[in-house]
Image (tube, rainbow, N blue to C red; front, side):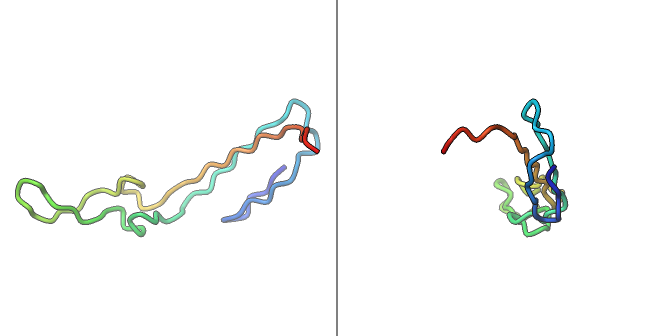
Length: 79
């Protein structure tokens, strides 16, 4: 089976491939690149033109992202 090594994934086939197994690994705690890990960015209020903090649209204000990697094992029928 595959091994998770933060932040990389070492992919190795399973010992028994009966039924084409599916694996799923999660990598969490990755800082959001859109807001640079702040969880917000400066926006402008349309009515009053005041500057306000808006939640990051990517991480939703949580400051970090999670990646889910799915591996579907199947036979390689190409040459």
